[in-house]
Amino acid sequence: MVSISTLVQFLIPVFYLSYYYELNPDLDIQSYRYGYAITSFAVLLGQISFFCGYESVKKSIVFPRIIITESSVSNFFIVLFPLLILIWIGRFVLLSTGTYYFINRTDYQFSSPYYSVVAQLDGYGLIIVGGLFLIAFTEKNRRNFFFNFTIAFTVFLLEILWYGFAGLREPLAKTIIAPIFAYIFIKREIPKKTLAVIVLVGLPLFAILGEYRYTASTFGVSEISPLKTIPVLIEANKRLDSQDVIANLADRFYDGKSLGYLLTHYPHDYDYEFGATYINIPFILIPRFIYTDKPIFTMGLGKWYDLMEYSSMPTTFWGESFINFSWVGIIIIPYIAGLLLKGYDFLFIKRSSKTYWAYLYVFGAVNVMRLPVEPAVIWISFFLKVIVLAFIFTWIHSAFTKVVISR
Image (cartoon, rainbow, N blue to C red; front, side, top):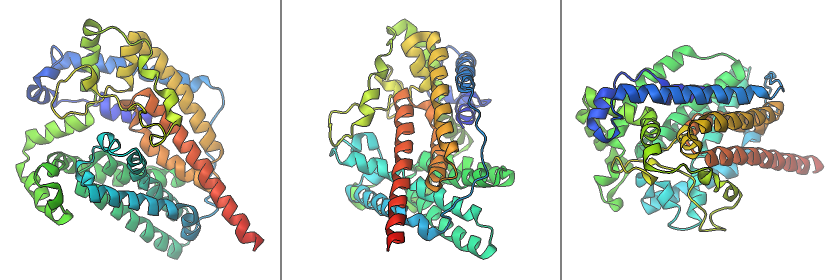
């Protein structure tokens, strides 16, 4: 998944970059062709090192045939219904504060130390979606399959509507991908036709959402409602021309632009960090509502270069490796990341016959695709959270089962 994400976000043949750099001249790295070349070289070097780290651990990973033992929806919700309630309580908090439409969680979580929990919970709806589709695809009885699939698809549509009205492209994409991953996980085959349809429909839609996502600037917070966003979506579609589509797609899918800028400018403008960006790793284990001065884990390019107004351009995992240890970092840090991911995969696949480990593995597989543009601290934080959740869910279900049996 890391490799697929890297391919999409860094190494795709970005024939449209010339126009994008004309719109954003500060990002023009001498010439966009040079920028793409040096970025591609850095990412390929890091990817090779990542694979070397992953394969250096000799433990072989063989996927067993997945059997979801507690494969009924009722058993599923024994553990995850409380999570579903918490997720939607958090979302109503987002709605009541108007933050849903601004959706800047990094700023939002500082409004109150407890809001960081709400910001985290919002993304856990993906666990529900992935788990329900795993149950559906495991079911061999046609009638039961239809029942389970209907429930899964209903929850899926609710998630799509939630993120769609806010114009959130990344969570929307994750939600759409989750059933695909669940299908691959159970059936061991890729639904090529479905993927082709998603790509053909999804790319233009993402461009429209790029225009639409700033709905909050159209209304006052107290005036915003889902019904009022529909005309804005239609208007966003009318505003788009072919060049806008290209610009929006480049802005969303080509994170190599910020990496390229760091590769060509950072050595001349700053001293190397020599590990300074990794000092936040110990804070992973401390919740923000306990330690309100907990550092921000996201690392935008704006910390060093303010190139685009209102931009959240990421430093990226490869860029962080470079600004710490130059080109040596692009070899060493991805190697370590490969070791970590091999350990993570081994832990989950070894337990994939345990129901909630399977649910969380699909959830993790979807989110891993975002990691190449995140700093190392978010990699480690994510791995730990998913592992802890898997243990907690399994323990809750085991405890509940023992209580039922004892009665």
